[in-house]
Image (tube, rainbow, N blue to C red; front, side, top):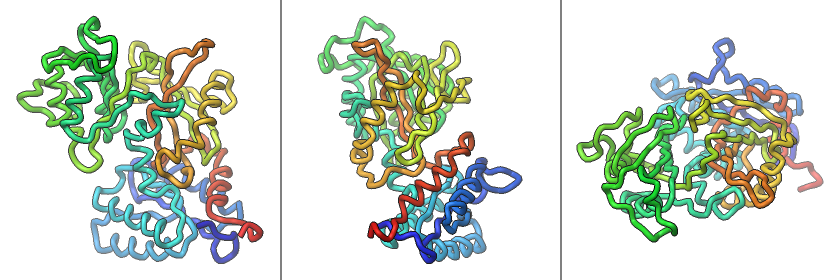
Length: 385
């Protein structure tokens, strides 16, 4: 629940994890943390930065227990914990604490772990497939039987993109094609591809290409490197359905991915920056690791007017689709170019969402907007009560 902005409740904690590669060596903090904290202070809000420590000693555990009392006394927590900084066990304890604060203690967490998981999971694409930014033939597989049945049908119809739920920088994201393009059926469901069907597979992290049978690819995705899956050159290990939140998302391949991805950087409902991530020549991966070049545009850039119009139209429906009550404080939506429409205008399809520690290091001039949005999320003036 929101609270009045008064002297007793105007405390907003900016929470980091201690250590990690995202920190400025000179300050020990993320490069955007102190600007956000300072902007909160300039808005008349009490704020301080706290760091949750890896629980590898009694001293660290005592530090985190003491921090818990400070978080309980706050009105809100702006979470700036980069995924992977903490061990799985320590992150799980922090997530439980943040959910307790958010659900039971009246402390607004921006964003809570469940919102990060819902938006960041690849099956988020299934939840928005009915919107203008989605693709109706998107499917999610949560077990081996679903995957075998669904993918053997979809790959027989047209080229696909298969995305694991975990990983980063494009690892475990495969563009999948039949080696013989004349073998595609005309209508979805008319054909089930046999297991000996030759496939051409390209992985997004480094753009390398492999050739395997459909059966070998299914085996690698389900069980990893085995005698049945054959020899693989991927840096990954497969086994994409294992563990908590293991899943695969199957989406139509959009050939214009070679023209890059377009990232919308958001502060609440405000679009602050558009970044075109263009792959290097002959590639489709838009990661920096693969050599892609990033170009920034203002939100009103004419090149992306059609994208922004449709994004603003879909925005009120997106959070409902995810079951999230509040628009995240900082989040991104990555679009892929679709086919031209009947008027010759570009269309755009969402490829990924993220609200897990989205950085604004290149956009520090918007720190004030981040602070204003955080305060507006938490506090209400007395005449609104």
